[in-house]
Length: 425
Image 1: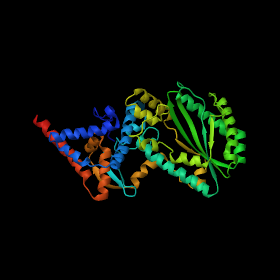
Image 2: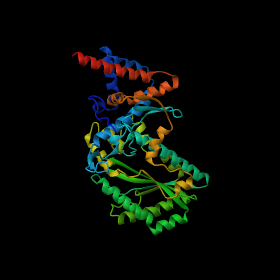
Image 3: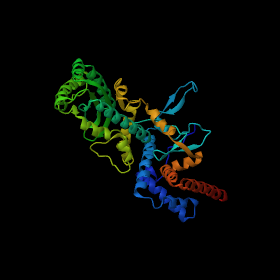
């Protein structure tokens, strides 16, 4: 497999943020148009773009650019020994560095896929990392499917007369606390919490059948890292008084579990929260990194509570945030974002899929409409034009246009002109 560099031209993404990337493309196009370069015609392809078109391209571009920015901060390598290389070889610790930058089959070009039902295009014959924590592109695909699965599970359970509640667990923490220590301690407390006899007996008496747990983390200047668990709890019956009696009981048991795990103890008021089904619906609707990413070019993180992808966005101007993102990525590497208790998916009629299977399904549900030579794909990547190209493919599929082919033609003409100019000089 070959590799596409993570580097970007000066004045592009790393020089001026998302808008800087798009502006760099347009300025370069205008400059070449003024000098008579064939690439100047690309400006014509981008003219008269509607606001909705720009938002769509910007949403997609933000994911590609965030993925490349993650590669910048997660560039550490390690020596890995395999059967093919018993002497060992250098490899990136985080798989996001290879995502959409290596061809699966180096003897084939980059395929261009189009999903007719979704009216979306994407590149094929590329390695996908399937990382929900560090890759904005893969995370969008994975969390969207997980959200649909969870919503369907809730609907199926309610159709059987069941009820769902949202439980949130956290503990006291302060700025300067180590994220790995916090998360390790919370996971240890969680095992003790569910294993306590009093908790088991209480939940059994209330008709509890299972849970879906999401692990999340934010960071703030006031309190540092804030890892916490959101847990959808499925009951056969409605809880009295919205479950507030159960909340008080679980709050005391959670404090006891945190004490056994050696954690800073949460307060009775803030360590545990339990909300009824309507609040659970609101949480699932906005659940996951998907909602954070798709509006990434518009949304700026709040200093009082930053998600990991907020940290990544703001690392462009403040390297401290990039160091924090690296800490987060190292700690969460290999961990599941969503956990279903044993047998719950089968009970709710939900098919089990891995994150990797979700990402790979995109290729299976689409058709190949074109292919790109590797050097053309690298040109699109280097100049932050992948999102524009895919949008052109989608527009062409709807109206039979030739925008995508025209863009490739302009790129090839520009390359030929550059070769001739260098040869003459």
